Length: 187
Image 1: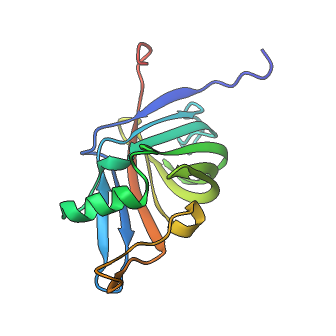
Image 2: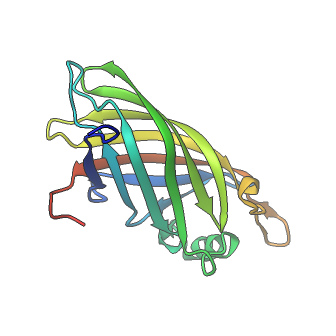
């Protein structure tokens, strides 16, 4: 059948094997938040060839509840939820538009990916470089970091204490995601 590509569905494994952090700055101190319970599905072409890596990333969807972002301070969490309009836009999502995989060495590859990131109801196309590796159990780990600007998503960097503390516009999203092959009966 022409036009059909073989693919294997992978789902994000437990948070013990995956993590996502949002790092930011302010004029007072740097800060970080960690995403709790993200969900993601990816379709890769089957592992093949001497390099043992997939040839294509066919699809990828990612979602995290905005209110699952947690820092060390509840007051910061609540300010963040207000800033990103978490009540009106409860999900932060990414959907792959296109990708290209380049083998680097055995079981290691680079993904150049373009997709749509949606935060606080605003969608923006971003381009990312992702490091990929195939583990001994055939799970796939994708890691890297992506810089974004709050203002690109129509979010004004907040200030607190009558302007004495100002949050920086640029954020860094660090991720280390472990995808396991889904079983035939998974949904």
